[in-house]
Image 1 (tube, rainbow, N blue to C red):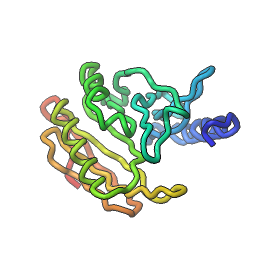
Image 2 (image 1 turned 90 degrees about the vertical axis):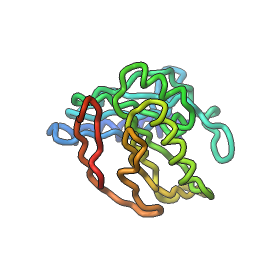
Image 3 (image 1 turned 30 degrees about the vertical axis):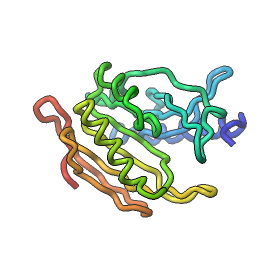
Image 4 (image 1 turned 120 degrees about the vertical axis):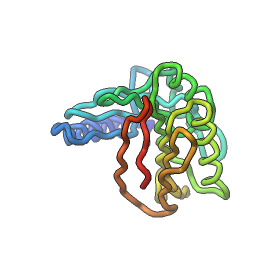
Length: 201
């Protein structure tokens, strides 16, 4: 569907409508969706704040194995720096971007303070442990805390297990959400000694 212009237009319009819900400046959102340029289609994440789409980041590592065929569908994003959000510099690693060190290294060198990895990572044996090990590797390399937010539920023949988690800059697990269950939490972050620190939940 994402290859069809009509679907792209509806998805983009839905993102713009979501942005309107942030007019009160109390709430902001990061949401995934397609981003279109002439002759190009990107798998992207958008920052919605102040009633508008503030900025975006494009996925750089496109998997082309197993159930994934993203190289056929999407164009590869270029390396980009962090998203500036209300005094916090958030380094976005979209799904597969977290599984290789290059994207995190670029974000570290360009001033990120915290890493956020939205995922659509389907369930498989030991996948939860593999995600955690990849997260620990990125935190170890950069010294930044990391939020991994994984999809939950079914889509066609795929099942996504959720199992989202947060690591602090010492690789300590400060939050672990359950598998196969929709959960909504809030977590407070404070700046301490020049670093963003998640409060344990």
